[in-house]
Length: 240
Image 1: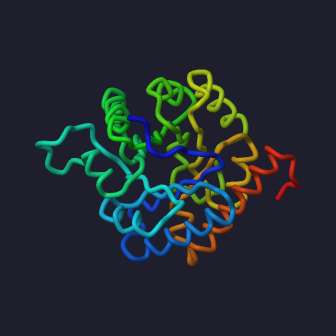
Image 2: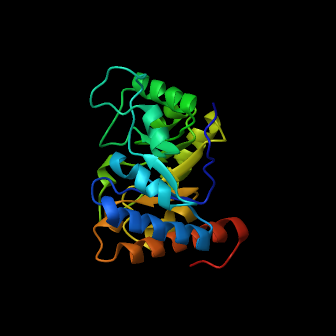
């Protein structure tokens, strides 16, 4: 069955990893829901598995994606993440192949198929244009291109215009319907603006948001920058 949600640009992935959980994360998710409505930016939140039901109950616009899943069928599999259970918990999609949870190519292919079978959208991480092209053959809904060395970085380094263009071309030569997000090293609203202006359909951040003194303030600035950069690129609006 097809995924029950469509990922529409411009979009932004908020990755709590294990930084945030419980009531604090639910509060931020509700705040993100308001930002999504205000700026017209689709926000994807990837909470801990245990927080998926609580977050899903409280949001309207935010898409709730699991941080990982396994390709197993119902039955044995202690400690595994069952696709059907994610749907029942309220997830509408799943993040796969993050550098902190990489998957062998064959298992990744199985996970993408299983996600499609149960109606979960898929966002798959790739290290570079070459890997992104190989993943595009598997037909995920979106691909995140992230240089592993930049993940979690606060140096202000991020994907360059040339690397963004190379990855976009590599993916869209295979399937022009796949959405493409460029992240890693996103530490400020200006970083977000730069990668969207350079050709990304979306961006995202984890540590810059969740280690900030005021995560809501940082998230607001990044969502605003997403909107401004997208409008500048697609409508000829004034730059930020």
